[in-house]
Image 1 (tube, rainbow, N blue to C red):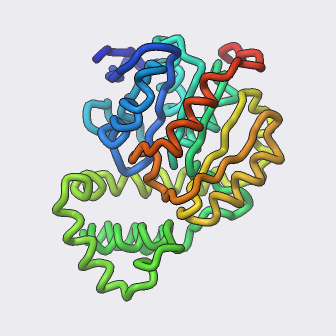
Image 2: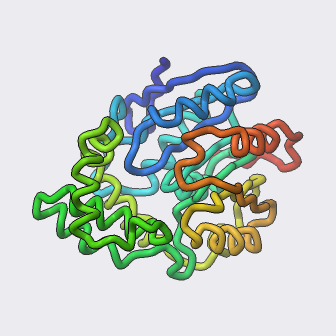
Length: 278
């Protein structure tokens, strides 16, 4: 582990593994870096993979209040500067943040998997208010049941009666990953609100000069496919990839069908000019 000093003086703990060109992973919302260790191990024979917990999680410093994109971008910038890496993987909410950071930081390549962006209202939002209300009432299970169904409406479980879904989530909350997601649910809802507040046309990211791989899972929410297509039309150096037999958590499972395309993408020669810090 290595310590990195953030712009505001807080300490970011960096967990690095492997050898070769560096890749920084910006993780998703309701989790910590622990579920990305399998991905890091799968890439470690070819790359040095840098993991760090985003604010408000595990060994990370507290979040700023109000929660802003700027602090997330500043933290990523500090990690990139310390590691010298120009490669970034962003997953889910981390994909949104990586995309927001791309015009501002010296990033050569970004691989996004199920990037949680909202393009002209594409990201579901109706679930957020009732999820917040349930959490404020102290019912974490109900809030998480509403959240998971709202984001993953393509799943059969999302069509079960709410009472059944709540019972399933109560059991899930007794597992290690369930406890983590339950504890981080306020953070997840804040992040969803931030993503929705940045809704707009795909062209708002047209200044991203990095090479971008827009990946998603064929078994995940269909809006990721549509969003990736819109981003590919707007970004000057982007391409899409839909990975078969893969859901939203496929990047954590680190199957070769997702690891190898990522490795190929980051191993190819860089064809863009790295942006300076602004």
